[in-house]
Image (cartoon, rainbow, N blue to C red; front, side):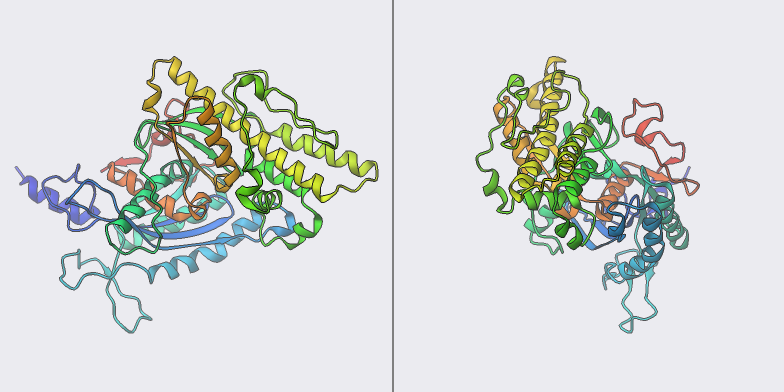
Length: 474
């Protein structure tokens, strides 16, 4: 019978370091290092993420050695253009990977770090010996299939070239787990280590927790009970909140501002336009104290109003198309009458559009918490609400959510949102999700293909995160 310790050593040489739960026979000399790729939409992103070994305590700790994004320039279309985004991935991904290689950690001089697996760059006259990653992470889905394929195939090629494992990451799972990366980065800094990322002081959310995933393509309310078990409690019946805010922004913002835009993040421009003084402009915000107050119609001095979606129901579902369609009617009516909308009215319309969207999110979150309570779950068991995705960078959204939780008897729920650079699509979150999956004992077969649609929920028809048949157990 083979010696178990010899077998473990052989596995370590083949697959790199994984979690202590899998190789408890051996102390790990280092953590996990991954090169990660994100290409699901219009952002080409590459990162090198490392989770450090911390044998002295139970804390996680991480470093982002490299993170860079290139966003496709689709301003002429005033929105995402699939072909332009695809071409941007093809033009930029290889260059970003090449740049990232120069930021791989240097192999220690003591030779205790798998020195038989090193990379020396041909154009580096110093002859530095760089650590080859333990595995590659790349977004597999959901997203635009052609765009995903660029990153996925590049990642698989690197895995083959370096003879290391590959992990195909679920894009939305990565958003959900981003606060855990933020916490690891913060703990690294607090312990006195070096990191390229400033400490945030965020706490790592423990399971179970709720998440609101809000972006240009997604509006989801999710209950997470483990790394792979995520129950979709609410989704949008029509379009995503980010798309609604972008549409409203294109109608509300003065043409001069739209012409000056450096990107197509119109929702962010709408926030700046509506609240030029930041939080001071909504310091007097007062949330609806109960469901009855949510139904009160708020008519503006100009005679228009925006009705709250699903105002008369407690249905656990989102709907945002009515907001952008109402804004379209208001602006079109003005134009048809030959009237010019003043800046004051534009600001009021921008604020009201965001208020209605954000209070709709908050209202459904309260309904979900009440539902879980009625199902017998201790209200204090859900301690955290994670808010992630591009819209999570909106500070007014945070004010609305915090206010609703406080006045509806869920003040104990902490809101955690990643810093803005980790809210939007990025490869660092893909790398961290890859690390969490790899530590849990999962890798992806090289036969995997990009998935345009891929649910989070294991109760869904496709089986959720672990539904694809090409997962391999380490």
